[in-house]
Image (cartoon, rainbow, N blue to C red; front, side):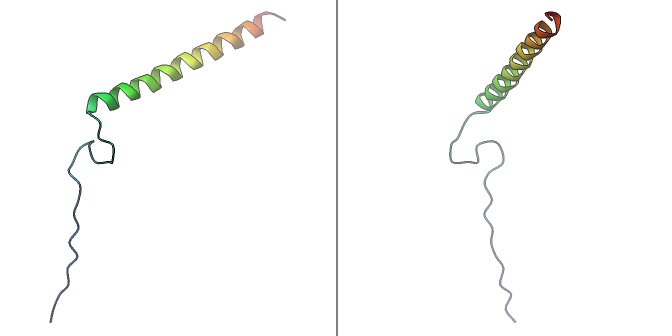
Length: 56
């Protein structure tokens, strides 16, 4: 009786698994920029909404 086993190769652990390799600090900087941009955008929207509510 013969058993056929499938061998699966897995990529190494960590962030550098895709086609484009980036260091961890670049991923962290991009994430921080996205979060900061969202905060600034929401703050500007809230400021604009409060100005509209005050000037009837």
